[in-house]
Length: 151
Image (cartoon, rainbow, N blue to C red; front, side, top):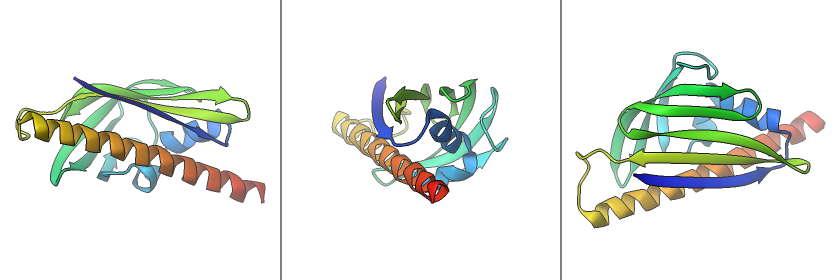
């Protein structure tokens, strides 16, 4: 199983960062490499399902996640219910005046994806790169929203 654990510090309170990630309408703005989002509820609740498509190395993979835990202002956990095997979570930790947004993503690529080791390593690198871009976009969007609210 592959694992990606990345973080970024966002100049905003934990609740503001949590609220942004918790709102499914925001996903097209910051979830890099993913598209066609369809959620059963506007925000995460235990049992909420979110369908999407992920694209890596020219391969588009439909997938669905199910929310397994929500701790308001602190954590959103989920597992794959189709497309990939694995689970992940978003955590939001206060760091001074900022919030450390942490994304943990444990996954196993399906066997139907080209199985050569080089291809799998390339796909895993691309997944990591997409998650780095996701965190960068999250930081940019939340901080811009905070500046607009302060103005």
